[in-house]
Image (tube, rainbow, N blue to C red; front, side, top):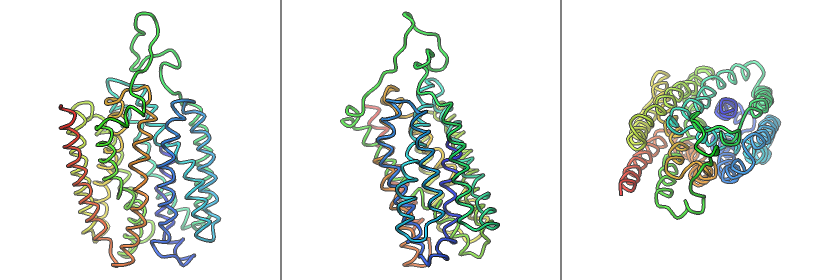
Length: 385
């Protein structure tokens, strides 16, 4: 599920240059529909998380798959900015809101002892999609143009997502099992426990965790939207530029898998502190990158840190607030924290148009991740009390 949904999403950077040249749009104009899209699916995750708790992931994800394919497919037919704002920013956003939160929260429900490793393994699909799909999109774009390439990817991903949705189950209790495959307790029943979302809204750790992810996610989509254009500005071909997105994907696979293991072995706070330090360093590398190898290095390090950060959220929510309503809680944090990230790609495009370089954009991104590091220290201190 995550491979397909995010593979499609992270391919958007491949189409930025073609869209801009055909429509006569600036970088900020081209990034605007994507920003609306990110804002839309982030806010809607608040509701799809609650829907997953109530109805289970199968029906929620299947509905989203259809909307995601429809939105991205219609985006391939857009001829004006308002049309792309509607197809990508509204319809596709409705579909994308059922991807990350329902999938990660569902996996977190099924495990207790090695929850971090389980979520890391499952969520690595996101980075595998980031690694595999953009180069495919670049090849298809070179052969058929950006419109046909986007349409083919949209329809293909939607159909495969519908197949994957059939195998999703809400939690082990719903089929008479227990987390980690443990035996049933005396009496033969088991019920997941934990705080409801209203209780969490009154807890300081909930808001500290929201602040941490708001700070780091504010700029997290900038490389996905602008790295290809940045590479093309250096004179690289579209296919070579797309390899920067694949480098992010490679780093993301390693980050998700290793961070899951580190969460279980070393604990959540030490792992998260390392993640935000590395992400700040990655943005610093982007700010000074002037060749394909330096972009690969920045992209790989960024992917590693970004993958680790998103992997930690659902397991940490399960640990802090319990399993019973984890999809609602993760959805709420995702809605509050990821919605502002919609501004990142647009503001990055605006700064590029104003300065002619991405250096300032990435320096600001590095500073914001330094702030996330400090907020994580504050959360660790709060949990020790």
